[in-house]
Every structure is written in C-alpha cells, then in structure tokens.
Length: 407
Image 1 (cartoon, rainbow, N blue to C red):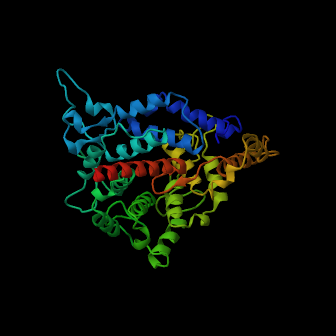
Image 2 (cartoon, rainbow, N blue to C red):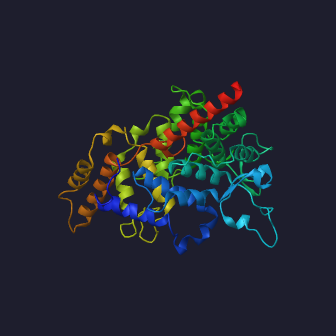
Image 3 (tube, rainbow, N blue to C red):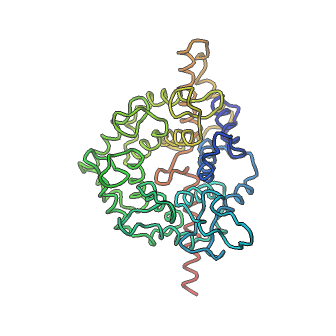
C-alpha cells in the first residue's frame, strides 16, 4: 500500500522535503559533496519508510549511483574497487584514460550504494561483486585485527567502518571473505565497563558505536553467543541504553538529546528484543518538537536556529520505525481508512495555543508510526521489503553458484 502525501500535513511536508533532496541539493550542503551517495541513501530510505518513492526517474537514479562504481575491469587496482563518495577523486584530466591514481572506494559509500540500489529495485547485475568484496577485504587493518579503515587513502578507522564492511558483505552474501573471529574479537575489546561499546578499544561507550557493534554481530550470526539472553553483560547493556533517554536520546551520559540517536538507541534495543521499554510518549514529544514545519525535515535538536537535514530526518524516522510492533497494523487498512485515521487522530487538537499545537504534532507522529511506516530491519537499517529483496538476491546467487558447481 502506498499512502497519499496529502493525508496529513506531516506526511505531505516530509515527502516533499525528501523528494526535493533527491533532485537538487541546497547550497548549504556543498561541503558534503564527498558524501553524495550517503545523502541519497538517507533520502531514498526515508521515503521507503514512509511508503513513498522519489518523484524523479528511478532508472536515472540507478544509473547515477553506478557512475560512482569503481570496477576492476577498468584497470583499477582491485583493492580500490567499490564505490567512491564523490567524482572529485575520479576526475580524468588531459590524456588519462584510466581512473585517477587516488580514485578509491569508501566502505560506507559501498554500504549506502548497495542499500539504495536494492531499495530502488535494482538487481545488482551491473555490480562488480568480486571486485567490490576485494576492495572491502583490503580495508582490514593489519595492526588491529578485526578493525577496518574507511578507504585505502582515508586514515579514519573505527567501529563505524566495521559495520559498513560487515553489512556490505552480508548484502553481497560474502561474509566468508571476512575474518569473523578477528571482528568479534575487536568488538569484544571495545566493550566498556558500563556495558556499551566504544568506537575503539579504550574509549568511552557511545550509542552509535554500540549499534554498529551489535548490528555487526547480528549480521555475523554471533549476537546471541556474544551476549546470551540471561547474561549480566546483556542486562547491563540494556540498562545503559535505556539510561540514555531523557525525552529523546543522547549518545553518551550527560550529553544533550539529539534526534539521530533515536535510531542508534532504538535499533540497538530492537536487536536485543527490548525496544518495548522505550518511553514512546516522551520520545514522540521530543521528535515532534524537532520537526521543521516550514521546510519539512527534522532538526538535530528542537531549536529553530538548527536547520533540518537528511541525516537527522532519516535516523529519526528509522528509529521510530524500530518501535513499530508489526506490519499487520497497516496491512488491513485501505487508503481511505488510513487517511481518515490520520485526520481523526488530531481532531479537536487544532488551535492557536502552543500546547495544542504541540499535542497536534505529537499525534501526527504517533499516527505516522502506527499507520504508515514500514518496519525496519535493524541489522542493516533498511525496511523489511528491502530486506526481503536482499534475501531474494541471495537465493538467486546461490542458485547460480550451485549450477556452476554441478556443471
């Protein structure tokens, strides 16, 4: 079922904001040029959560993503294969016929590109799968087993890139190419005294790093053995995650709430089967107060001086979607029923009083969560329909491999 963007002011403005960003980015985002694929991922996945599609030609978007693909067939160093974040590193000058010497893949761009392509309905038939996996494997850090750096010429290395590598190989059905024991060992060394995980061993626990650690373990099918259901370590982690909620969530103790942690904390709790303990009322109050009603997106914090942006909009929506109990909440609703439900939920709340306006926004977000949003598959931060497409690709690839072995 695809919802009508006119059924509520919230859904309509969110959709308009996200569709606008799939076309032309505002000047304020010029500094994010090296992250173009991630920005598109935020926009497309947000629309998918809301059961919407971009209003530009999907085939053009897919072609555009593949223009960032670095293939081994192009004469490129296999260790550089994958997806670049920007065309700047791959510019050809003069008589150069091959990619520039510093044209390299970034592991988070690989993850973003794969998720976006599959969400848009692509079958990855144009992907240099072998080269992409080789490019990911090349990013394992020799001096810290289990750790990954962002790119061959990018010195950043922490838990974020472990997740990007593991999630990408999971999507490509190539986890066997990774050193699972080394990755699990690195994650174990990053566990802190208060129960969370740090970006690197010896640092303080952080909600974002904790999600990346848990999601990586889940993709590797090691979460339950690493944190058994009855273990003190698991109980301590759940308590630490829940302690990060004031109204919204924050990433570390004694820090201000930030809408992006809606996902990092809620997804972590969902992976542990404890999302039901989130105080949804307080969370919805915080999220609704951070909605930029003029532009349509969601701000980092409830402060008009902060502009809304794709990252906080996406992570806020996907975090809320982690709290959705089941897809059955919307599967039996017709489009007309859904429209009526959204309108009736705010009936009588419209007025000039600030409190009434606040209550109206809260109910709009509550209805959006209950009646519109797709569930999120927390291991990958994609919707359940996208995850099912990933599973279909796995069955297809395994069937092809089996046929090759038989022949």
